[in-house]
Image (cartoon, rainbow, N blue to C red; front, side, top):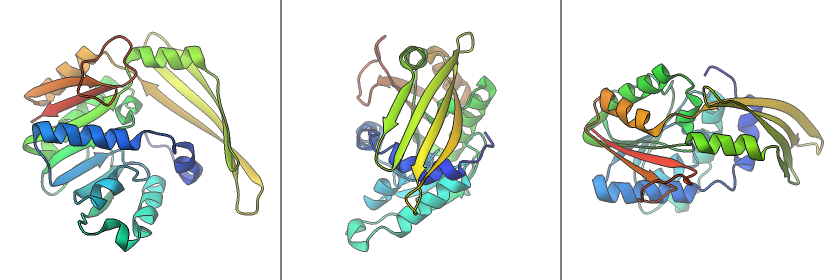
Length: 255
């Protein structure tokens, strides 16, 4: 959990430009329409702010929390560079905080917490998942919601079966391989990244990311142990039940 994301942060948005951020935002709004619309939202594992910033632009008060100071630096720059006309007539606020999602805290509780883009899969021990759940429960108001997504075990198996992956764009490229440890359902993503510098030359650097998938029933039980009174399961950005083909599981937990 204590790794640096310096070079990776600088190219993160280029690598992630095809990610379905609008669908994550749409899922959050659909859930909030069902469970209660928040005013203040914590975005756990906010990265470079690709979800935090649109939420603030639409009027929410957002706390963007991430372990990586490099990611938060990029997020701050993006928010500071947002044209004034892009956030009128309704403007929320953002406060960027460098904290560990296993033990995050604010001075006062919030209405909602989100953690998307499979952030919780990066917690590779059950005790860490449970710690994050307890911190989130403590940070929510009564009736508040915790929305998050995770990859199920079958998705990590798919990554292992379908790798390697290759990206070849004008300014950035990568070779991405995966190695799966089946007993723990833990996968190591190894990336060799080539990024174009300001002088036109390319720099090469290596990245390694480890994720673990958890049994969905265990996740529900852990949420209840943390104190959540209601836990609902959905799949693939919709308020629909998951099945064996679901690539991404979503959870809505109510305090």
